[in-house]
Length: 482
Image (cartoon, rainbow, N blue to C red; front, side, top):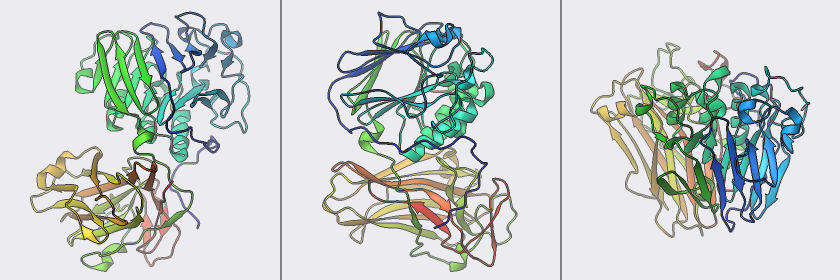
């Protein structure tokens, strides 16, 4: 099946295929981030081996790495600064692989694959943009370090990690939290969806846009290692001023974050609970049980802002995705719109759960308007796990997660999603519909994509105004158990 994407061309190639580490391992991995002006981190592996990232502040590490050759990262000696650095380590190179822990270079010299990678001479004016990024994975836990990387590479890296099924639990924020050259963009954080963030080093200071973008992507806490000057805006965001060394400890299943006078967690590692691993091939999305005029399904993709006179729109929306490029949008559904996802076979699986993510725009929802979702287990409808009505819908201005459990012993389930709105510009967005289970650990996921098809009317996207033709089922989705 041919897919058509409405997006700018990505000049950096995609990451190579990802081979996941074992989900559960033994022993403790620790990562120390130092509360110093010059940025430095120390990884201690379960077998006691140590690896430094940038500045070294304790002992003599067994392995040394350098993100780029700037003095505030202790890289003034250029290639002599560390064993592994941006000029001798290519994307895909494995720096450590033992006891279930893998440290992989995922970007260097503005590339996220070894194809086309070249060395770039040590030069203070290009160092930040060429930063080497390392992904530290242990069981279901992933920690991403990106040096002072620029936004163009961040976004390409984030999208490639999403395609690989990597869920970043913790991110070391690029360039000390600044937005220089579009670092820490909403798009980048939207791809990697970090639950926690660490900001270190005093080369700059955290900017409000960085904090906002992290919060919008779902970050629960943003840790400051360095004692940055107080800002008037930081109290509006989930900032925790450690003002001390920060120590993260994980067994690959859960992790804790601690420092001077605090200890937070344990938190579950993402991939140990809700893995995001879409299958390679898309399948057609089936609309079933649509209540109302079937013609409501043939209108345009992403009519927001196109002044479509017909209204009553269901389609792929390129304006406000949670992850990837598209979400599923419903606008002005004078009749109740109902879409059923599935069926999904859950035979023999335990602790089966469903979750989806919803946000709205318009801020004019009324008392009779609503959004609901429930599970049908072996044909029997369960109580709704999502039920928002009226003015409460106005408060969902960022994606909110809704989840529900499935009765034990169920053989097959469906997810039923319904929307009623009665005016233009009252829009409900749906993204990242998932089913997960504990044994065997795996997940089933939907990604919304437009596909080539034929229709008497054009389908449009605000993301560049590209016209697509498609029938009422012109949506593809990646789905399947992994």
